[in-house]
Image (cartoon, rainbow, N blue to C red; front, top):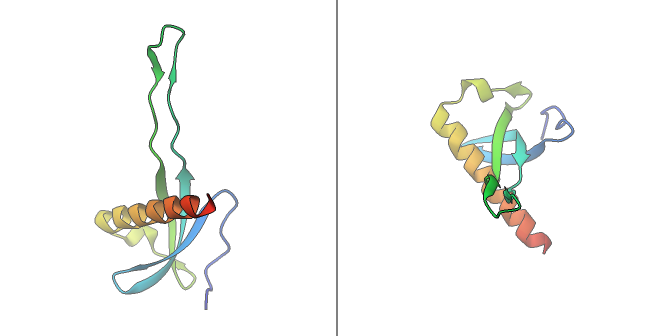
Length: 92
């Protein structure tokens, strides 16, 4: 039963298992973007890679994101990015 608060507009909600605990996570997602070049063909803005940034991680109705060790946050963000890329590939 999902008793986490609803996902805020503009964020991505993903259910992820972490260290044997089921979490309902909310991520801020930034898609990859190609950089731009000026009229001479020189790089004006660099390419930006896609990334997911953890905003909240709920166990039930308690947000534990601020309690997670950095390596767990990194793993959750990597899993969310992988999930997002798979979803985009499924859409094509």
